[in-house]
Length: 401
Image (cartoon, rainbow, N blue to C red; front, top):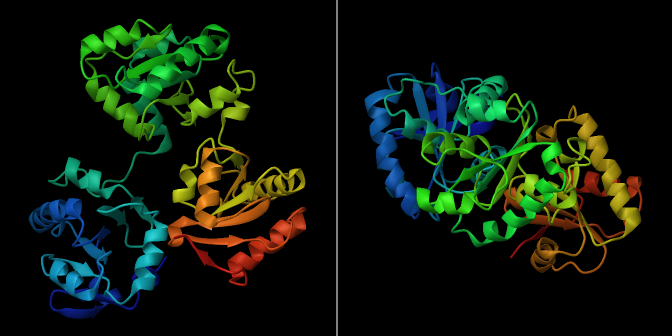
């Protein structure tokens, strides 16, 4: 993708406006810095990034473009005055919103690094630069899928991997102090003893605060554990599995590749693993109450209620989108869900004020937009027609409060 398509025709420099093509010519990477004057974590990170940029990154050919979430132009100008790099013009809100959506920015500060052709290097540039302030690993190209898998195996260690006997491994991230963990652990132990152990080994990865708590908690578990002292491995595994909260149950293959990071909902529906691994792999159509996290990152199609015809029609369309994306969930342009009774469904109903059986498209990354199908959406053709109207701008757009 051309950089002008990402940033627009011009960028601001400390000395004034400059054509984007000229400003970014010859750069080896471009960092997109999503930040705001009002954001305390941003105010803490910005001077650190500025110092690293002046000391190391600028000489390596990096450009940085500030994409502002400030509330007005005065605040933007004051904040940009502290920065030694480029910025999107504040009035170019369309480009800023497009970038936020493209890179699934959910909070600030966020630092995305791309190459000169506009290809993404990493969306976690903040961690990359903080872990490597001298740029020894610049430009921080992430490991390949094979390298990531090997890093997971190395973190677990050859002894524990060997003890799994060639079976998949469930990584159970949990802690003695965590009430939801204390509720889930006995259920998982029961599943394990009643047949799940025939399908996989489980390894406890502790977030306990000390070894005594770890030891007490581990006594309740019928499986293996990563040694508590190996905190570095624990952090690597947490990062590799994207653990944002506990309890978390992720399942990997013996070679370290990921089966699912949502093993908790999968094992609740399949306690003995009778349908493992097929039903545990990422699916194109899911119950929104199991894992609503894609709603914060993707445009989501949601069949509200229990109308069987609508649910099956949406399921069919989801399968078609899945096939069109090469059976890669991450490449699907929309995510698809059913929303039977449940806590997440209740929340969606409150946000959208939808009652009864309705087909909804929820687009939180685009600023909280949503669309409600006027008709029954009882067949595949009706679902496709509604989605076509959403994509073409014909559907009535509404805004979450």
